[in-house]
Length: 289
Length: 244
Image 1 (cartoon, chains in turn red, blue):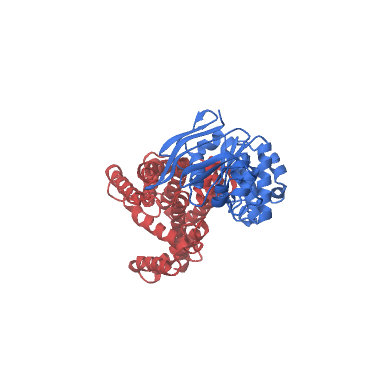
Image 2 (tube, rainbow over the protein chains, first blue to last red):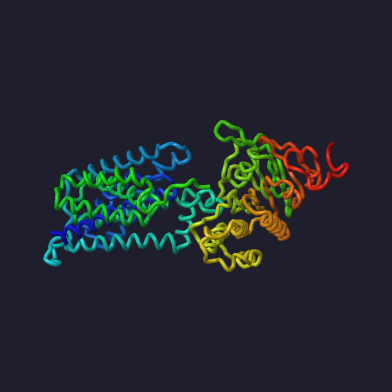
């Protein structure tokens, strides 16, 4: 059972990390977050279902379509729920992004239907045996793709000029504007990228979970927990926290009870907020000049 | 007509009026110093000129173009670069990347060689993370990054801040050489005397208003200016050099 739990934990953990990285990306560039990240996961799963199952698109095209659709979701959120409140120092964006997520959930209910649907995948029908444990190939694929996507994001940020511009915005938006970086466009890009990662997670998780309009809420919340544990300002911390969270969850569910899973997971979050509020990978906050 | 023309500029910060009707001008290839006490509104003035802050009233014209209320990323494209207070270096990126970002507004890095020639210390540290540079080197990097945009007007906010006296002199020398390349400089300084030494003209800003202006030489020997902002004069004011 241990191997099975390990694989499930790594698969889920990588997805929590991926979605949590989305919180980090928009937080770093704009000090705002998309609290409908969970619904972006759901949107990704629903769009993937539509493209792959209903329309019969091949996998790669489905992936592309899902990424584009969820990136657009992020752009819409930024335009409707964040930009109007960006200059005011209020937390209006927080409620507005939650509102957008709730609306998205309702739209999905009206179009996709209330009921959960299975996402058929050849990789999630027959388990393979690894050291005597039955594991779905999809569960092995998920963390690999998840890590590849996170690696892609890191490459983008540190090796491409556009990524370096976003990094500059994250470090000091005022100075970045003085360089000629169009700040609203940078923030919008961050929202698109963040939602695209969530959408990719939705696509990858769809064969393992069922696709349903409400599937995103708890994933979004857990990913937020992961972002807090890892440190909102630390991509590396979030990666580690994602895997830790997934593993804890999986092993508690396996050895204790599924009911205890959330208790332990969120207790860790509260403990972290008390002991090390800036997160695993974050630096103790100092005032920026 | 001057390169930069500012007329009746009012800037609010919340309920406070930080600038209350500032008018000034900078000619092409001129060094202009704005001096004044802490909290006079010097930094606010530069941030407004660079498009970081929006004025409540007034007019900013640069090279004959209306710039009032334009955002910073457009102002720099028009040829005005601000080297902000505290330098605004991207400490988590390399010196090279900082310089590249400085040239972003032009989409061309052709200024790199000329800039490195002027600041040779940076050439050997191109691949160093900017945060690892000393204070003086960071100041040079900030100036160099500003020049990467090939501005026609460079706005400098307290370039001497936090530097040892020798480095302050080096920085002011660098400013003088920048002007020799045909770039106009608007310099805001608390080190009033040294700023006036390299400036052609000066303004004294006090509580959001210009209270004195004139050729830098005259301001530097004006007794009231000396008493209020410059500390002890280095030499006795010459007779007739300013108002009694």
